[in-house]
Length: 393
Image 1 (tube, helix red, strand yellow):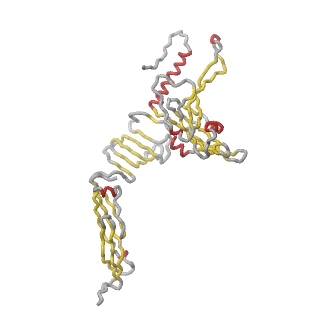
Image 2: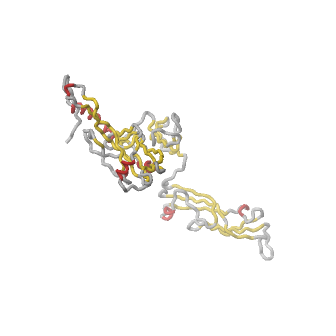
Image 3: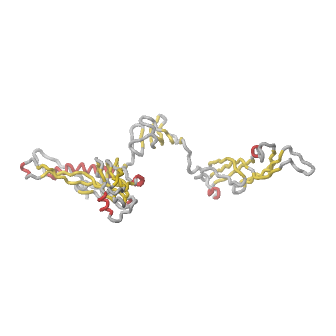
């Protein structure tokens, strides 16, 4: 059955009951929670990192005091978890939570949960007709909890849509991961934290939206709030030449980003680095260089051997022997090159043999050509051109 939000209306001189006054606080709280968990994704807004201070016990054992730094998070119910002061984690509470099965060096997850705690005022009511009842309020605090390895990956089920806010008092069952601690058996205290593992698992808030709009000219996506020079930025912007998508690095406040890749309104792509990916049909890729006898010539980048086998790529190879004097047995002498073989086989393996004859060339009575004749493996300049009909990788 539909349960709409009902706002109370008051009349002049009406005596108000406590429930009516409480609804005035419950309605905006419910609206805020619905906004937080339906329009946004739960997680850490800012801060809430773990930090350490190394110290030593009376027996000389080194251990770490672990602290939760101030910050803000939103849980899956839409509750805000606000930590305004640095809070130290309790080693004794960790032992009670995990028991006697603590493994030294193993990272244990640390969670923060929302906790609404009733607080009684020390002063009574100022109304003599009230019967002296104490004023009551609710403190929107937090609680630190410890889990076992693997608890950080457990799925949490979002609450159903409701017009009512979450419970006015008590702890939420939604856990927000803030980090991992390790244990020292010698000191019976924390050994430290695992910041690397925390960086891979800490959840951060997001937004649920079908459209994200900016001002007249720019929408920018960035991985963190405070950018430093060199940080990554993605922009969709309106320029004099039309809309443009730009990926690059932050250079400083008020300065344009250093563009690494741009796509303009015509679809033209400009990139500082190399572009790799699947080739379009009917394209030609080229590879060239120098190779020695016995070497298998490489295919151009982006073309695979499987494409050649499947007939999706046609290979054309051209080779020419290196016959310059610099490649002779004795570059300081005078030699002539007699090419005995220069080809590639079906595997694109180079077959090159060259006979080098010393100059001058003179055939004596015995048929000798030159004073020195050396035959051996040679080298070639090659050009490999591949035509792809179905695209490449």
